[in-house]
Amino acid sequence: MHAAPVRANTIPSVTTALRAVESLLMSSGQRTARRNAWTAVLEDRRRAQDRVEAEHVLKAVADHRS
Image (cartoon, rainbow, N blue to C red; front, side, top):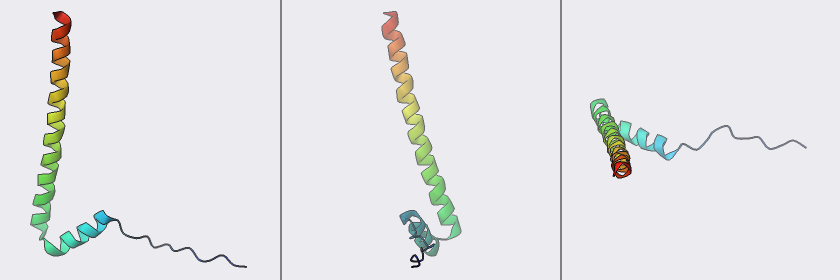
């Protein structure tokens, strides 16, 4: 008996599908602008988290000195 052939094709991910739709609907400049904006949002979130952590460290040092 022979084994059934295995499919090599995978179902595209949601991200891949969204990028395909995006490429159809948006010009290259709009895609770049959107990605740059999202990168800026992620960087702002990272900086905000860094500030919160720094505040905790400063408060712990201040409490320790009291």
